[in-house]
Length: 286
Image 1 (cartoon, helix red, strand yellow):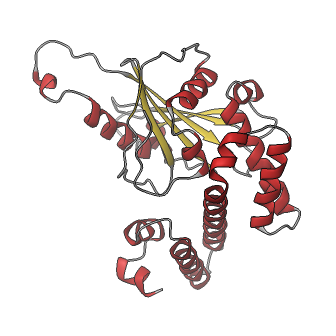
Image 2 (cartoon, rainbow, N blue to C red):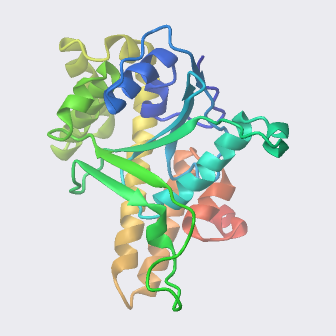
Image 3 (cartoon, rainbow, N blue to C red):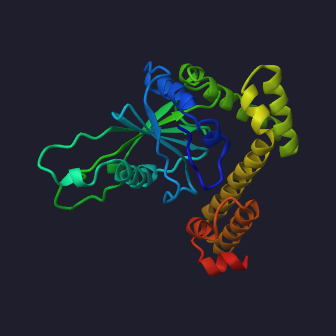
């Protein structure tokens, strides 16, 4: 069953929008051996809070495991909190609400939350982020106190990292190779459109993502241009914000981010407002 996404796809979500590709990806990530006849239900939410910050895929395997796989080019320590809100909404969508009030224990799919990182900053092969790290210390207790936990497994999928996992999924290996080729072209000074075109040719010559790129070449160009523009804009905004005593410079960086996000036309005004901290009226006026 394919994913029904009303908002604009990224290359990653487009590539993994079908059950066959997701099963192969999950087998690579989990070390499983689920076959083509495995029951899989894609239930990615279409109106996810914070969807402007994460590219998400959600699915249930054989009614036993609910899996969230997110793709990130930057890592925020607030991912566990954001994904807590997400997984809660997924459960709200898939469970029988009436059954929750019965006396007998209701069995629900176990969650697995995985983030695939392919940004430019150094990052270990694997890191686990815990929701409890965000809990405030309570003076009357010597340790962090709480009965809620959520763990996010973050895997670095850049070249040279987790190669066995990456090669375990044909689509994931193709994606990593393709993005690496595009970035190499951009870093060498090529225009982004040219870098994408050359990366497509490289993949075609090496039999990588041939069918996908042949069917979606123009979409890929548009999506990647938007994604890279967003990465650049957010990087500029963060760099401006790091300089203490430069509030004016930071504000200009935020405005520049807003202008670029509006020009990219990938997000509605209300979500650009959420990213930037500006009011909807201020965003509209830029």
